[in-house]
Image 1: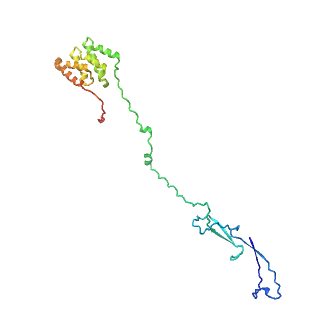
Image 2: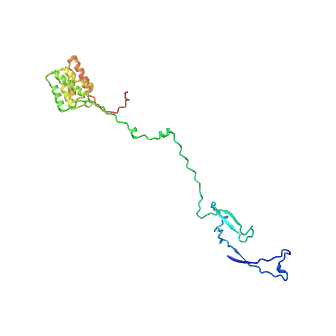
Image 3: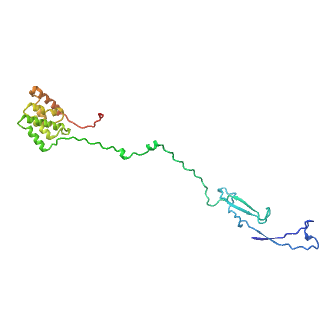
Length: 261
């Protein structure tokens, strides 16, 4: 702060001349008045910015700082104690622009039909219950059973042999897997050599119907019966039909036929 000495001259308001121009007038000594002048940048009331806020092309939005301007000499102002308030925008060094964020759009409400369509199906609903396996009862071809049936086919009684042949036909017909069963094929060859023509005719029936296939021995026995004249030639006819079936070879292929309702 610097001190400036100033004198206040006393005027005669009637003549407009200083009083010290009149002779004999005692000039009062002017009182010295000390005026305090604030240097720019040192005022405790106003802080000057380091850079110009008016020439800065990159200045940012207003920070809302209040600036007070103080006129210590009361020159050009109404009173020495007048204070002017002004709002200036002073950018701060680290101030970043504030960007307003738009509210996130609300998710569209799903209708009840859409919600149901998007609902995952549980594993229990997608998995079908396994179908119940069908079963049936068959006679098990044990060694004891085969030996017993063989004894019937070799009996001296023609009626007992006929009963054994009927039993043999049932074993073929109750299950397709027995079409070429070796044990049943051996029993079939015994029945084709029966002394009675009626029993031989009955023994050829499972071959003619496709329930039994036989083997090479079966084919030889059938050929021997082709020239038979028993039962009015019916035995020879049955033998020819059985030979045709015995010549077949069966295989398994995919079934693409539609299901029967």
